Image (cartoon, rainbow, N blue to C red; front, side, top):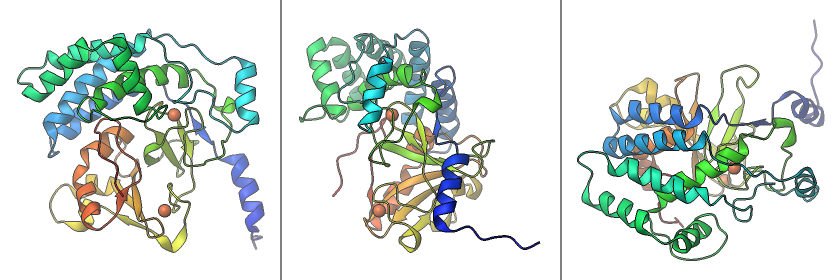
Length: 317
Ligand code: FE
Ligand code: FE
């Protein structure tokens, strides 16, 4: 039987109706799954000790998010944001619960309990536990883009971990159909942050679709495949690299599950994770563990489109 070929406009209309646009994170599982994945990846990663430390951090995040307060915008505020195609719980402007600083304390305490902790980490966590509230709020404002200022790169991952708890508590309470598109497709439709990486899902009804994963609130939003998540270029500008394609070493199957999607238009990349190659892939953990791929891409002249929240890297030009 002959099939009618869809015109481009028809394809978009059809896609808009059939693809789940947003995946709301599950606060009862997200950090626990991340902790487990970090421990798994630590066994073979060149930064295994760092991954094991942040597995402990993720355990503390999991414990903290369970009873973290969530002051959500009211219906009128959500509607107002949607009218202006703005994120309803914008990282830079939605008020943080003061409890995020108690979460930071708990995270630092959990890290500090680890045996054989390197001296710099002992210092950082002790410094954060002693820091005044206004100092911490100022650092949080800078990290979330609310104001300019210097970032303490070593402390940033711990601060981001506590802020992730605050935003996951909020994001996880939205319904997917409450989340509307915003003006910039490369930013999280809930909090306006940049994605850490993207993931191609396998489970119904998301099978085969690619989602960008928010570095802050863990919301995931759909973006077509073979398109640059930074500048929107598509087609011949887009290519894929993995460690397996560059070296003979390592577990080829695992390496192929994590690839860098490079763009010749803006010369940047983000990683893309394939659940069909490895069902365990997790957007923050796998991005962090595959730091060797970042080194490969840096050598090849590509800039990371945005950082990993658990490893502060200076901005690249
Ligand atoms: Fe977000
Ligand atoms: Fe691009």
